[in-house]
Length: 438
Ligand code: HAX
Image (tube, rainbow, N blue to C red):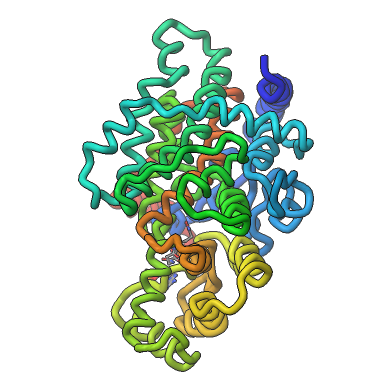
């Protein structure tokens, strides 16, 4: 058994026993109560699932196995660059320990060895019109690779329940290993006349992805390492994580589960917001006729967006109530690596003027920027201007969190998800009988 799998087996066996004892002793303890407004309000804040790999605090932001983003930047191995390696974060999320340089290198090599994409996946992609949205291509490619699922094959052969986690681990490792090739194929076929770039197997996972996209230079490789790390996980209730979890709970394999999650990421209130932000900024610049808008001009443009009944993309969050540390991490990167980008200056001016406007509306619970408010301007700076592709970058990163959790869900034997739904007339009757105002 490989060393990571071995560690995972030990840790998950111990946690499974702990959960069994907790349920036996305290299974009937009430841990939450649900208000009517939460039932109609997208289940915000309802504690109803377990997610081992990360946890979100409304004010402090995301912590991966207890580590904040600045702590990860400090503690995770960096390989040949100056930013944390996403493979090291995967190790941390999977087994709860910061890997050594040697362990991280082992994982990089594993993913290199597992990175061959089935030939038919390229043929499936080639059959799609080139103007198919990259996220649709991404979901199609992931689904097409399902024919290689170890879990599905072994399930058909009569695999024991106790081996589900092992087959899921194999699928997870293979799928993550292949994603940079799949994503860069989509990018190059869509925007660069199918001029594909051969992988460089001497590079780490993120740097090789940067190379296959066709953007050279050490700084962009570092950007990809950081980008793929900070977008990886955001606890379990966000739409892409929850969708992966829900589909996975039916014993669909990692490919189908992840494709479900990526369909959720493709929505404009979630991951697609990263393309919407840069589109919105570029439209503003175009409308105002200047690449250096004043704060007053931005205020007017934001007000016109709101007056048109639209949301301001990149701002607001269902859980966070402070500026997103993932936004701040990208701002720090831009301050360190990039000097005088007009577009990035616009992002920073937006950061100053948009929160007060959203606050003044009186209904927006979080007026601060989220992860998507910054990424586009940095990518444009490095020449990755095709913003319809941006959510695919997010998706490659999100695989690390949602698939490591899928391994946990299998190892802990989590059941099929099946919450209760009711009709509004049921609710009206229930309230008549139980309302505190009755
Ligand atoms: N601009 C204008 N209005 C906004 C707003 C924004 N950025 N954010 C919230 N609001 C509005 C909501 O539309 C809602 O209005 P109505 O009552 O008229 O429907 C009201 O303020 C209350 O919303 P909320 O409770 O503060 O926010 P939600 O939890 O309902 O929604 C969203 C959270 C992220 C969907 C929301 O803030 C939004 O639409 N933001 C813009 C899109 C965006 O950036 N999405 C990416 C989020 C991060 C992410 O998942 N990335 O992948």
